[in-house]
Image 1 (cartoon, helix red, strand yellow):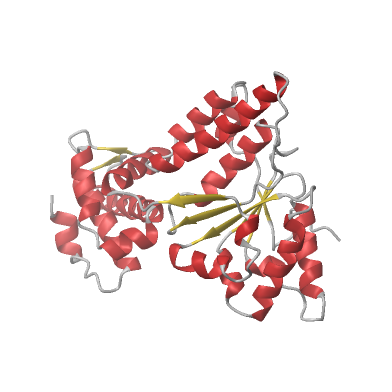
Image 2 (spheres, helix red, strand yellow):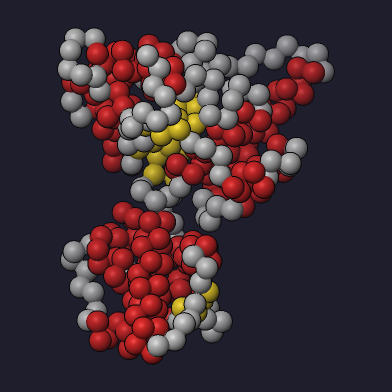
Length: 313
């Protein structure tokens, strides 16, 4: 039985609103530039994706001009990076890109983790579950998040072996294995033939303080709030520079999400105390939000007291 999108093991990615806004952009290169422009940082990664797209386009043009072009059907990938660096977001862009380029028949993206492949414990159940997941992503992209968890035990290694049997099939989905830096080497060494089946490697660097500031501004804008005009990009960058390195590298963009939420909590508390409505976040609110977000990730980071965090400028 092929798992339906409602299967709790599998996340079937639906087109987002901004995807529909770009639906009328016909030229793939222009579409890709617009999509990548919405991502903060990751410049080297963006250049690598553009090169992938231009390479496919050039091969197609060479073929149209009569050249005999050998196009590989092996397009599996590894995404390596810390949490919150945009791996899932880029996987969604990649599925759409490969569809636009004619590499896959649909822009379908199936997102799974280790649990989707684990059977019921009976002999052969792992292979059956794996085949079901592969089939659900047919003609699209299968995004395996936290792939390093598959090499933690014998069951996981059975999953890797089962996946490998499908990777060379002409009708196999393109598989993207996502992993953190510390786990990717062990994952690729699990089976001697695994690395040879994955030609594309993409690295997601940790976000700089300036990039985190850009992401924070975007998150706050999406919340329907604004940042006080006197707060500069440099001010926000300093806020993240003052956060512990452990929190920044373990959270990246997630740090911004929590910082925005906690900054809003601080603003809401002020509004309640003053009996007024405001949607403008001050530097004080942003500092308090970032400090609380960082403290939640790094217990060794001593968050300033409520009095100092709320009253400090």
